[in-house]
Image 1 (cartoon, rainbow over the protein chains, first blue to last red):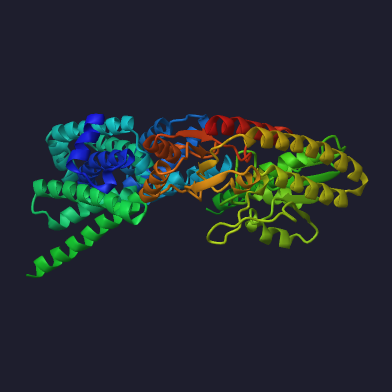
Image 2: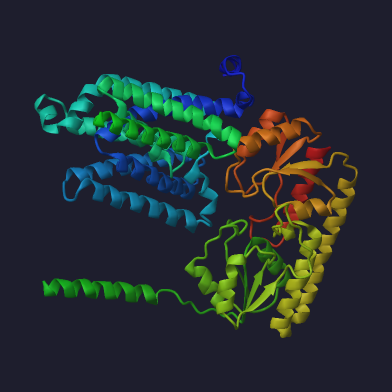
Length: 281
Length: 293
């Protein structure tokens, strides 16, 4: 870790990298944002932006369960609940009784309400409001290592399954006829989203985690010309808004997560107008 | 179709009815005192000790902590409605209670902050954490004792004796803390929540900076950086977090500036025992002696 710190000191000898907590935050941003950019592309493709939002809300219930069971590290209870929650949503969606957005809306509000009820029962919801906003500055070196492994795992899965994921998302019947186990591929994707959302919720926050997933990919869709550039642009936008948001938040004294999302949103509107003028031309 | 609708309505009615029937236990309680939150509950426990037929209830629960952003629940309302006396901290801690108490004209409200001079922060907001100073706590005990004696005259004598006994313990502790803290030379401290101005005033400590005035929000990167620079450029040797809130920000500041993190307890959560406040303050004394020696 010290080697990385001195590398940052060497490359970025600025005021905002003076302290280790900012170096840690920078490293975390460098790992989280590409992850979100990458997975976000598929979320936007599959029209699942509401789904990841519901998972974010379910994290609150996960925390509440952790509090009730006396687990110090809420990650375990959050992850467990989010996986269960994600697979439930996906199972109910498969049954085809209501439209996807309705089902997700039902689950999302249930997760949030259950979290509020459980957390306020144990005396004051305010103590956990930190999870709503998130705090990237408290990320610890061990957690950065964990993020690095998750990024690596997602990259490997992406490499192995990308074509199957894409084909399933475009046309599930065609994918099935080519011998792809579409159920498995869909569930795998749902599990990936649940995992990265719960792992990063502590630093990004329940309220804005979904924007980080959706905004870069949405902007990239406005700009990209093909699949490859779609992914590259999404990852780049995600990285750019993450790092610049962190720096801006340091100098303006604002919350890091919110600043990052505002920059990503600005990029989206920029890409939107760019796209429109290009279409007209 | 009609049959099914009738069944649903019947089921709903039974559900509502049976829910409504639950509870309403009758106990042999003559006089009910409800306190707003933990520090007052401990005071009331001491004052009412051994008085027959009295019941002391704590509205916010022992783990709720300070009542910033407290949300009233329906059980709290029930609790207050059944109370003979509602004891509150005052000084703005229970500002949300005004609407409740104004709806209950028969409820006797004891404001324990009466006669205590309040400290305000730079923006002129009055600080409600008065009980953290032992002298103020003694004053609050006396206010509560008077309030209870007025509301329940037949036990006035018992309240007075109890209050005197508790006050004696408090002043012994205060004197002990004054003597033991008198030889400390470094009196600069940094805290992470605005709970300690009254405590600092009492024991002549100098609060250099308060990071995180609102304990449930996170300090921004700039605020952290400013605090770290402040500590590096001054003689501050320790930062004080509170057991009630996460230490993450305190740990960051401490790691970067090479000072230690200690835990100072404003006695706002804890065991429901009579000596909880005394124990918390004894603990604070030990912490301060170790941190500032």
